[in-house]
Image 1 (cartoon, rainbow, N blue to C red):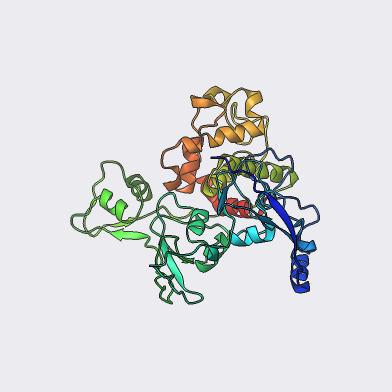
Image 2 (cartoon, helix red, strand yellow):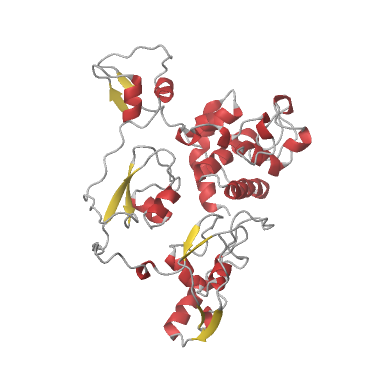
Length: 394
């Protein structure tokens, strides 16, 4: 459904000096090379995502009154925060605030932005709004496919707030069955249940088999899979379990590695992130791509490798990944690794998005399913570092 461009009438307001000073202070911290936040899905020749550096009318105290402004707007390719604000007669600063966005937040096609303050949306008269004490929190139990971003959006909060409340650190890794504290309330929830002021119990790492237990039942209880239990405990498909036996619920976490990227490596990492965002790949999938490229090529577009392996992901012409020229085209090789509906290699190979249930797999297993490496555990060693790159590179 198309949205007509509202008629705008300039209205000049006398902005208090304190407000103008606050805006000026906020704008003064933007880096010198910063540019506009642009919706992913457009061709951006800049090497990294750029931040907003100016609000066109904020310093002049000018806003635009809009006739019949809709309550929300769905982002289209090419949209920017300021262009949306201008189109609907609101200030960029207000649009960011109403949607819990920061000056460096990335927006995506298909994302919905609120065009008015949340308080302006009146609750039904028969159901008075619940009063929530400052600092109150609710909990969310992670299910397969959840991301921190999606949970933050559901509870009208931010990724950084959820990470802080749950001490997630830079990796923001969550797992099915995990309980997270969240700020705010779900849109459909009539009230919040306060969280006890105690530290949540650590997730169990092992299960003692009881009479009547089955691998399927144990896997379902802990939000994992039978295959993962078998692998974690070195069992085969026909293995028998017995009461009193202790089963690991996941393999031991691999020792983590870290590295600083030079200019060439960083450029490739930024491209992996940019294309992942463009394709709508969840953060976990982008982190898997970064770790895989680091393991396979040290984040370099190599023209050599083991046997006929080439490029960022050491893809092989003999295995159907493309011609040598195609594989060493970094943009194409990244898209082929991600796979999915836009895979330039079609059905000849299987990328990450083509693997059923990849989001529920261990980090290293998801990468290995694409790469089929002789050293599958190496991908997991870069999981934390890959998440740090994802959080810092633009």
